[in-house]
Length: 287
Image (cartoon, rainbow, N blue to C red):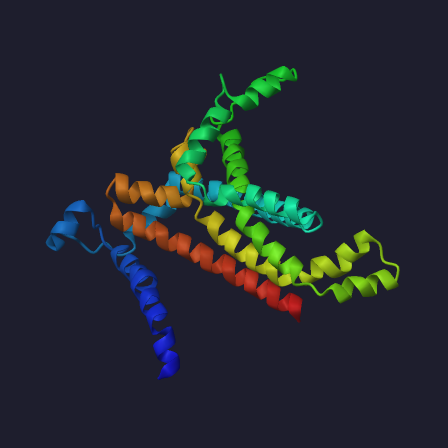
């Protein structure tokens, strides 16, 4: 019983705050529950697959899936590349500078997203923002950072990448510092240059860290919510609407809890499939 006593609290929390909500969401996705239904269960009706059929026919949901795929396809590789690049640079500088820049890159990860959004909203402002001021000084025209659907997506991705570098950078730094120095000493004896040591020692030794960062970053970007919610509200013209923001609006603004639950289950399936693909790819790579 001793092992069960140790893992019991964690398992209990997992059941209460992860498994049970999933089961509840699955149940209400087949109903038309709304705000009235929460107070009076007699008004709830079983609608079967109607919510899922309506989602398949909903152009806004299609748009949210498309936008989310763009966020993932651009944001995830950028976060991984930038985090690894920053970690590699910090790993080769002196201790005082290492501490300063480590804190500098990590602070955005723990800063409140609302505070960040307010600052970046001023930076992105088309008329008086700093970014357009710099572009005008260089002779370029104004960029509609948050006014054009596609440009707004890129603007949110830039903000999210900047905010997400810190945690992944620390993971890579820990992995870099765990690589045995004997590997590099042997490479020096063999006459390997810096690029060869990076390619044949450093990068392969970071495979497990890269796998972890990829999986967690992919899951996080599939649930991309805070940036479009605070900065654009899904606009302009639903150009920044993500699946998570769609679920929030349907559930908490339009009180269509059953419809939102159905959308959340589809997002859940997306996350599970993406994670399984990552695990399968990593397993085949190891073999």
